[in-house]
Amino acid sequence: MAEFDAVDAVDPIVLFETWFELAKASEVNDPNAMSLATATAEGRPSVRMVLMKKVDEKGFTFYTNEQSQKGQELKANPHAALCFHWKSMRRQVRVEGPVEPVSVADSDEYFHSRSRRSQIGAVASQQSRPLASRSELEEKAAGLAVQYPGTIPRPEHWRGFLVIPERIEFWQDGPDRLHDRILFERDGSRWNKMRLYP
Image 1 (cartoon, rainbow, N blue to C red):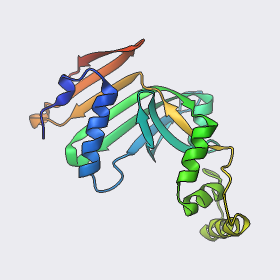
Image 2 (cartoon, rainbow, N blue to C red; image 1 turned 30 degrees about the vertical axis):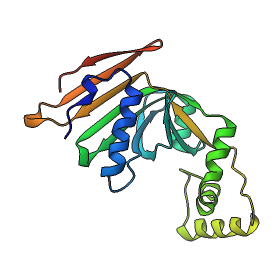
Image 3 (cartoon, rainbow, N blue to C red; image 1 turned 180 degrees about the horizontal axis):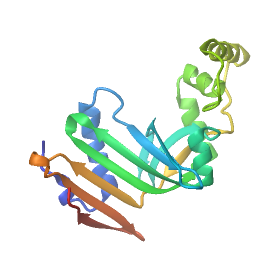
């Protein structure tokens, strides 16, 4: 493994993008997969895997049905934590911060960049609600394919969310469990950096 470059980094987003490019070359499946932790207004947590679709200086973007459990929790408690784990690289990145919806235009653009079948699947799914059988879902998807032979409208409740990072931690496996951990914390327009005990 290359030298732990987080020690010298000053911008955690640039560092994340560097690690992510390496992950895309080394991970067999979904290097953009991340665990997304949300919580109810009362603080009861839940976690699941989602796919990051964009990262930039603003933060980390993913898309979902806002009527799902995670969508409802984000509405009630608009904060989240993310964790990327790249096993082949023995690296992990954790992100924490508030969450806000992305623009309607961005949601439309991404929705229509997906395959037609994925768009139909998004419209067909009443995410997180009880489903009597798989055949019911498949029949609904087949009916939507007939109903919309051309452009498939994005459902209003299907949209993107931006996690605005306040904390980003970079972890790299070390010998004898002497791992490296570097934490960046946002302070206004700048980032403070510190090393943590493993």
